[in-house]
Image (cartoon, rainbow, N blue to C red; front, side, top):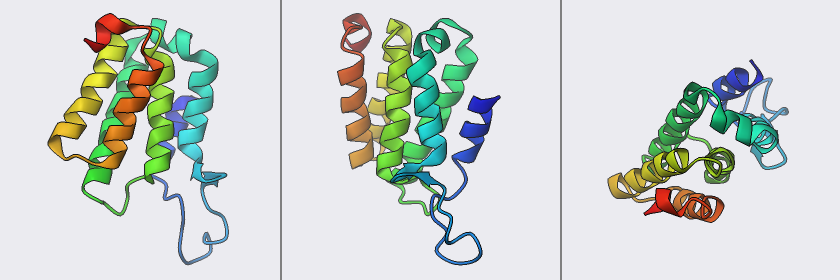
Length: 140
């Protein structure tokens, strides 16, 4: 349930410029708190997530693709680029345990790059390549 809550929290703005929540940013250091929570779960349970039900990884992939799309369109509700990279790191920590998952994540990054190139998509592809290099058959 913690992962579901962390995923849902990705829609919570990292900063509130005004109002009663302005003094309480939703972040851990400089990154979105939900993205950091997902990273910590994937650091500790990456192999288990990779070998378990694909639903968890597929849901995280959808969140990641959505954030890359929002960033490429410079949408106001997009996570900051650094927080999207934290989300990429999370997925890559899981994908490094499975050639199929590594291939799917790399495909997502390449699709984002070809649709609307942005720095976040390029950094996500580089992070995925770095973390998943032990799965060369998945990366082509």
